[in-house]
Amino acid sequence: MRSFLFLCILMLVLNGCSAPPSTPIPVATLMPTATAAPAPPEAPSGVPSDSGWQSVQPGVEVRRLRLSVAESSPTLIHVLRFDPARVRFQVGYAPDAPKTIGRWIEEQGAIAAINGGFFDPENRTVALLIMAGQAVGTSYTGRGGMFAVDQAGQVQVRGLAEQPYDTSEPLLEALQGWPLLVQRGGVAAYSYEDGERARRSAVARDRAGRVLFIAVTSTRFTLAEFSTWLAQSDLDIDAALNLDGGSSTGMMLRTSRLSDRVDAFVPLPIVLLVLPRA
Image 1 (cartoon, rainbow, N blue to C red):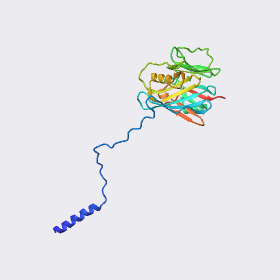
Image 2: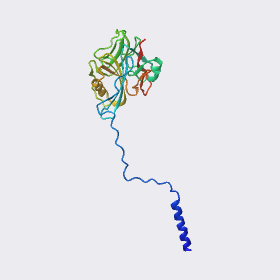
Image 3: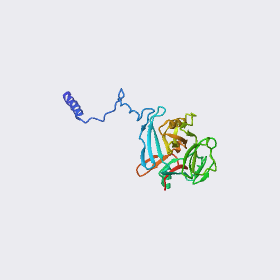
Image 4: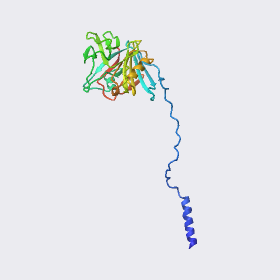
C-alpha cells in the first residue's frame, strides 16, 4: 500500500513538472529600472532654433523660432512678413457672426490673417476700427496704438499717445490695440510686470517698412517680457502693437507653396487680413 501511494505521488510530481506553466504573477521590483536621460531642449536657454525666412510667394515670408523663455521649455513663435507693395491689408469685422481664422481666410480669399484687437462680451470692438474708409467704435486716447493704411496704401504702426487719431485722417483701413509693445525707433514700450503669462499676438512694422504678424502659441510671455523680446530680437522691428491674445490668439497663412496655422480657441469677430493686390 505504501509503495502504491509513493508511486501515485511520484506520478503527480512528474506530471506537474511537464505541464505548461501557469500565468506568472508580477512581482514588484525592488529598484526602479533606469530610464534614458531626457532629450535636451531643442534650443539652449535664450538661443532660438531658427527656421530662417522662407519666401512662399513674392512679398510673403514665414519664419518659425523656438526660444527658451523664463527657464521654461522652448516656446514656438510664428512670424509672417509682408511687403506692402505686393499685398494689401483689410480689416474684417463680424460681431454678429464671429468666425474661425480658417473661415475668415476662406470667405475673403485671403493669403493670411491674424486676430484683431479687444472686443466686449457682445463681440463689439472696444476701440476704433476703419474698414474701407468707414469708422466703427471709439479711438483709444493717450494709450495703446494703431495699425493703419492710408488712401495711398502706406502702412503705419504708431502709438496713440505720441500721435493721436485724427478724424480727418484719410485712412482706408485701421485697427487699434493695447498696449503699444515697441515704440517707433525699436524701443520697448511696455515695462509693467504683472506676472500674467498668456498666448500672445502682435502686428509690427520693421525698419524696412514690411509688416509682421507674430503669434506665440504657449503661455510663456508676460506682456513686459513680450515687449522686451520684440525690441531685442533680430526682427528689426520699428514699432509693434499688442493684439487680443490669450484664447483669441490666431494666425494663418495659406499659399500654394506653404501653410502655417495657429488656431484661436474662440471664434473671432475682428481680424486683420492680407490679400493679393489686384
